[in-house]
Length: 481
Image (cartoon, rainbow, N blue to C red; front, side):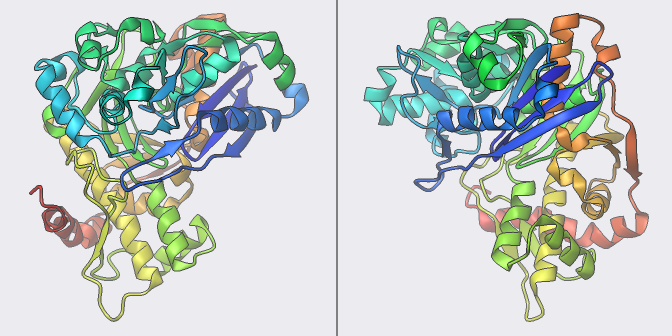
């Protein structure tokens, strides 16, 4: 059996797979995000460790005792700054933090070939500009930095004592030569850093170390190998078999991601498309990233007094698609693809006297779907063909929302059994590859199909006018346009 651990933004999830790929145990533990100032988003690194322990210990002890390997997945881009004693110097600055837009511009000026090397435009979410912000605003902290780790790799350090990372997660730092699959000395130097402050790099299925005896005893598992793992998106792709050129998925988590596997490096930074290494050797991927997806559902449920996401979906379905004129711009934490705008914020437009909680709920489902459609269009502009998307993440639980998304994107959605397990599933599979070897195509197969949603022509037509209005609305709420 193999244990996969996903260090997410809203919680840690741990799952155990048997040798046949079936989930035989899982546990979760919640996390919270701190926002001490506008645009800021931070977490305490030690909260990840406490949540990891709780999630693993929630799995049945008899299952834990049979684990033969561990893999890690995690939220991308988080800047975890450690001193010479490997203790955090400050709270980690997260992927959806928007404070360092000026530093992005400075980094692009300092490294003219940045986009060519990294394959990406500098965005506030990436790790590199966060370090420039710390150097400028917290110089006493910057001077003490001995190591910079990503969130899951800080957990790895506490698990094994090793400072290591995988290529898919490290590609999101903006310090990686993504085509060459190695650190870029030029970009690191522009941030006042060297490779000595970076973790060692591994392919996602490679073994980086072994659980310490203390952690093994605490978790009730054998002292087993730990695989490098992957970023949440790359590991999620591995978990649902998106491992061959052209395979694609839609992740409906806190953020929304369209992920397309590629067998070569295909950057397109001009339209805020991400090009990163995959978690498997010799593979890359393209992504469109939307900073708010399922988080919008939680938000509107809270402000309208819904009992939770299920109640919110029921309210929206009672209203029905295009039931009112309301338009929702889902930019609660800014946006990446296609706008690259950390300062834009969400908005409701075209409210009237008949607007109620049901129509607001429906407008939010549509707004996220329209933003995802924008991202898919950008990938298509880059020459990527996407005919169907495997759906994973917590948002995959709502079939009704899937109907809205399929119509907005005009693409077939394939829902997979256990798809909501997401990145933890892929992390466990990477552990299996690391321990047992084998062909990824044989190990990383798609789970059985639960159901498929084909775009309903009538719904496509009903949403067309609102989608057009949505695309015009961005210019009304931002001074950038």
